[in-house]
Length: 176
Image (cartoon, rainbow, N blue to C red; front, side, top):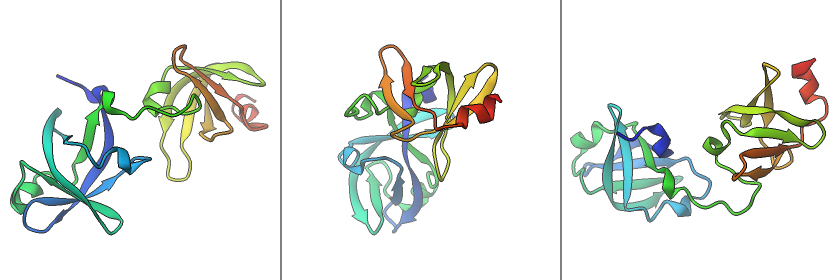
């Protein structure tokens, strides 16, 4: 059975729209145009991913209306309300340059800073409302590094190395 690492999150079914089983969808992606022509989305229920065929996706105010072929009435749609939408990981759009990365790719990567040299390993990425943060383990301590174009400027996917530029004084706050 596929696990969570085989899929990536693209959005949520936030409200039922009308009586024909349509959903109001909130997409959580950088470029919505990569997802508006998808033929299938997956919904996870009870630990299993289920494929749903897209009948249509159309804009609606600041959201989108999504209609699945398998769902044709409001009562059926109610069982899926608040569900998350997923796609297989191999459908992630190709990134444009070596400064971009997907969060799941950098977990376990070596961190090399321009000034400090090797500065630990990426433990996880915290997605926060104001600023996403990389949790780096170095000398058995956690360092939180904000993700910006300046702090995480290069990703070597092949060698699993994230090149950074720590803001002045940040590392010292965590390491003393």
